[in-house]
Length: 521
Image 1 (cartoon, rainbow, N blue to C red):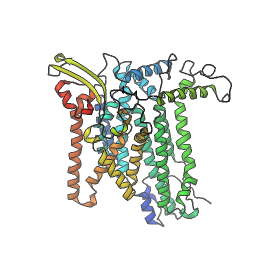
Image 2 (cartoon, helix red, strand yellow):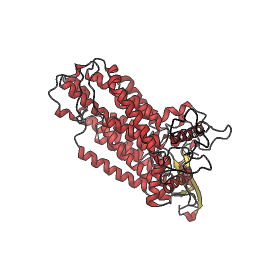
Image 3 (tube, helix red, strand yellow):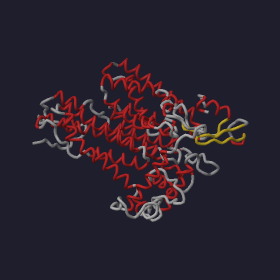
């Protein structure tokens, strides 16, 4: 006989029956969520509005003489094709489509609302960047059990140059960044939900009914995480890394929960009770959402490689039992994989703004998206003017990445702190896989999905400075001062960089003053 339990709320400690093993229940539930739920939502929404104003401010500027800038030149016309064709691209004359369709479908919505102009090109990106601010406030609040630290995460993400610029260009990286963050949020809620369910079983004295522990029923938040990861994969193939890393994180959370509950065989119990359903949630669900993004292409007649069978592929053969659309999609995907696998740095002629992953944590080689010089007529207040957009991580934030990540590693090694482990997994999923092929062309904007996890790592470190109420009023005052000074420094740094994050006209001297390191030039 095995135990199956109903789903309580993640903060259900107040409705538990009289526990038979109070220490185990307390260990399972951990620190409760803050009780200021209304204030928590108000803070999150206010910061989202502020962030939206910052992200959308003059979002139609700059352009390249009225045309898209940098890699917008690829994605903006492709999004227009998606809008024109009802959800898919059709450039059969050449194989230029090298990413899944979802990001461009979302950009097409912006073009449908605002038209084929700079605002329309970038509206969907700005909205995604704004929603990410709401998401990180709620994620940090759940991670730290502090509304204040949740608000701090929102402020830091607003003031992050990488997140800001990525949300103001018609490119695709901001979309997987949003979906990955939403998946991470769902995993955190699932963790709390699982522990609350197990706490009910422990409190009722049923935990020993089987050596594997109870079945946990349908875990809706795990399914939601799988759906978000599928959307991330449909936005950009690098979402595959997060499926692998977050799947491992989820298994680790389940093992720790069953062990804390006193399950006799927690590790085997995790594989028996949790891994099989996790395969459904983290494999089948993402694949279904990924394929759903291709439905317009599947239904089309002119989509790129849609009718590869009978042209590039033989009608019969060993794969003839598969639907033609699936064989065509596999062929298309193979061509895309070949493109990415052969996108190497030409020897002796690298891209001027290419960088390698060891430079990314501190943003040592940013990306110049737009540059235009002008005369005093541009209105910068000097004899020569410059308008530039540079993807650059706010130094006060990104240069703190090494000590912040080092602190997280130390906390995991010495105290097995799950919060730091979770953040490191999210950071590593977007950073470590790029070391597997260092000959490939790589750019700093690949770190866009990593930026929220950098913010979370910094927030966790700042939480240590802030301290807890039980540590005394004087300790809290000193901690609040330190945190306040650092936050003000990040915001001030962001304000200083503002002209080169939005393409404002500045003097040539101010432009040179913005370039702090030789590698920024």
